[in-house]
Structures are given as C-alpha cells and as structure tokens.
Image 1 (cartoon, helix red, strand yellow):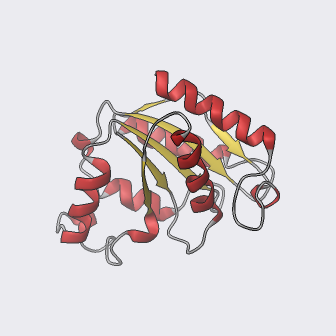
Image 2 (cartoon, one colour):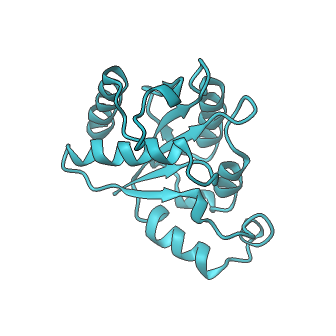
Image 3 (cartoon, rainbow, N blue to C red):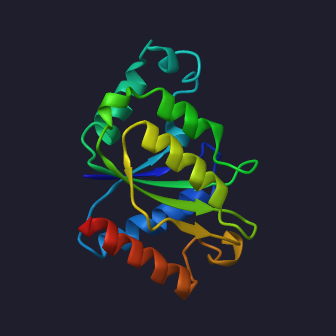
Length: 173
C-alpha cells in the first residue's frame, strides 16, 4: 500500500490539491493510494500523541495510513525555507520502528521559484535518520498557483509529465 501525505494542516491548501492530483495520476497506473491530509490530525497532537499518550484518533491514523503502508509520498510546501512544523511533529509522534526500511518519494511545493528544494533536503535527512529509503527523483514544483486551474486540477503539461515519470520510477522501485 502507498500513502500520500499532504504535509500541511492549512485548510484548502495547494499542497492538498497537488496531493489529490497525484492520487489521480497514480490511479492511471492501477494503484489506489490512500491520501492522508495533516488537516485531519488530532488538535492536541503536540501535547499528547507526541509524548506517548496516544489518542484514539491518532491510533486510527496510524492503523489506517502508516502501519500498512510500504511506501509513502510526502508532498510538502515551503514554510520559512523548510517544511511545515506539523509534518515534523507528525513524524516525531510515530515510533521509528514502524517505518524503518520503508520507501518514500518527495514532492516540494512553493509559490516561488525553488519548489521547496531546501525543505526536501531537510525532510530527506530526517527520513534517512528514521530509517526510510528516499527515492532520488525528488520533484520540486515551483509557482504552483500558475500550474492549476480554478478547480485545483493540474493543467501544466510539463508538471504532469515529471510527476508521471516519478510515479513510474517509484512504482518500480
């Protein structure tokens, strides 16, 4: 199973829109990934689940999206030159043994020019520390606001092409 993680808890985010597009692209390859939006994390995750006082809501997320997954796709926006703190809190709240030796692909999102390259580097370092294998074909998506139509559907042919290439390689890996 593959879990796609929309790495922000910001409501109606461009990250979630890209994640939804990625789901559709994977479905073209006869893959039915699960989509986890960090909007759905328990409100008090930083004060309970992070320190071992598991909530039923977080246990459900782990059981549905994390434990059964063999691969993850992390789609993370650029926040202050890196990735969102909520994504780090989420990773910190999961016992590392649960994800050791699993595989991950990364997509960085930004409204600017760099496609969250620095954030993907930071996230790669953390995932390596946690024992995950990160696919080398990381995809920065820059100027995201200009790549989707008014309904949040990717319209940029080049972006669609590079995401499809990443999917093909990731599925074979």
